[in-house]
Each structure stands twice: as C-alpha cells, then as structure tokens.
Length: 134
Image 1: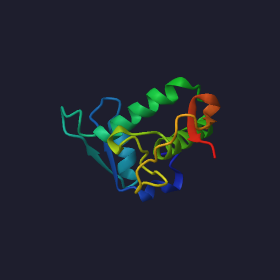
Image 2 (image 1 turned 180 degrees about the vertical axis):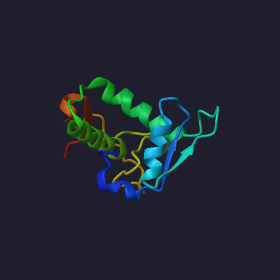
Image 3 (image 1 turned 30 degrees about the vertical axis):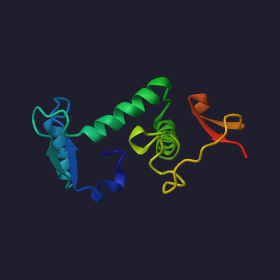
Image 4 (image 1 turned 120 degrees about the vertical axis):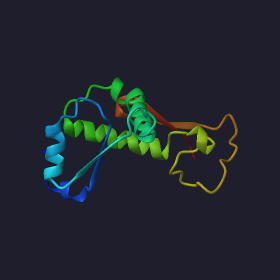
C-alpha cells in the first residue's frame, strides 16, 4: 500500500491466486482500503493465463537479463520494454505485426533484400529494434 499512495481508492478489486505467501493480514490491509480481494478458482492454473503469460514473457526477455538497481530503474525498464512489446515486437497471432502497428490496416510491404537497415538499441543493447532506412 505504500507505493500506491493516494491511488488505492481507484481500485475496487484485487485478483490473486491462493498462494500461501498472501496472508490474512495482506487481505485485511486491502479490505481496510476498500478493495475487495477476489481469489482465483482452486486448482485452475489457467484462470489468470493472460497475466501469467505477460509476466513470463517480460521476465524471459527482459528482467532476467538485466540488473535492476531500484524502483525508478525498474519502472523505466518496464516502460521501455512495454513500448517495444506493443509497437515493435512481432507477434505470431498477428501475422508478425505488433499489437499497435502504425499501419495496422495495411499488410506489410515486400521490401527488397538489399535495402539498408537501421538498428536502434534499447536498454543498453539488450533489445534491438530494426527498421528499413530511408
């Protein structure tokens, strides 16, 4: 609750699994702030599959490969990666287009093989973004 500060009143629900690391005191603090705690169904690991997939992806591709110094650094890293994930990283389910592609309505143009490519390094070279040079 310390990091949420005055924003805790914006939340109505907190969805969590039934892991033992969440104590009754944890639930009591949230209830005291007016947030209702909802538990995922027992023995249903896929109940929160979208969140689990996102956490796994960001850990594998980013945070497991970089030393996080403090909360400010973590927020900067997560913001940079989220922008990369949504605007540049290809997704198989979207025909290798990012979710927020600039030209989402048009199919990708076929570009000749010998076209120059420009590389942009993010997070000190941990992530590279490539685009065709003009």
